[in-house]
Image (cartoon, rainbow, N blue to C red; front, side, top):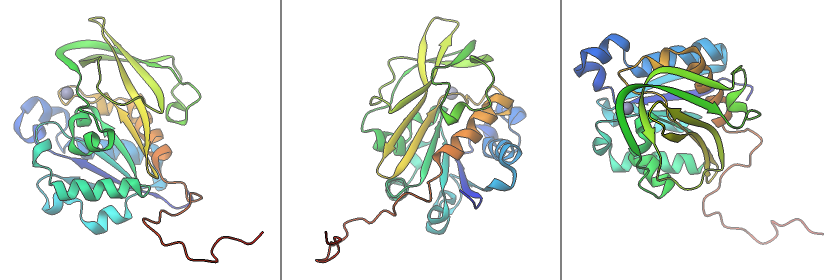
Length: 248
Ligand code: ZN
């Protein structure tokens, strides 16, 4: 993309205002740390907007969504409070080509469940365990410039299989945890014209979005998710008029 990527970061922004541990790690909110990481990695190639649940239209006005190339979604406590009409609008934008980066506990968001058609549930344990994020698809653009076989995070929440998602188009990362569990932590999907990436790391009580390699992963993912200008424009339910097929 020759112009900057229009990125919108949605964060429900509740933990940061109610849990002092989270406030210490993300004083300006998870969305601000994500925005800072993207600005550092993408520079002038990113135009970043943030949106939170308590804003009118959750900060996702038709104007904002209409201009968004890639939407990031972080949420945990208040999936039910996201307006169903808003979910439908986001869904239509993805089918028309907008990219979606689903982060950590957003596996249970309405939009991810709607896109996947499954419950998207998993096993979890909060025990500050070491996580190793193994790169299992080293030529994929999402892991470019990650100069290691695995990213090690010293303290994380465990997510374990079975993760109730459809078979991903591509599996990029598999996590292993101290307790022995494994998890499909980086999965790509396509729905309509839109690309989707699920990325597991990001539990709110650990400084995971400050980690340089996680910031690189997220910046790579945003670039991969951005619609390709060469992709044909999406025309829902277009009438095909006689004579529109080229003659032989
Ligand atoms: Zn969590």
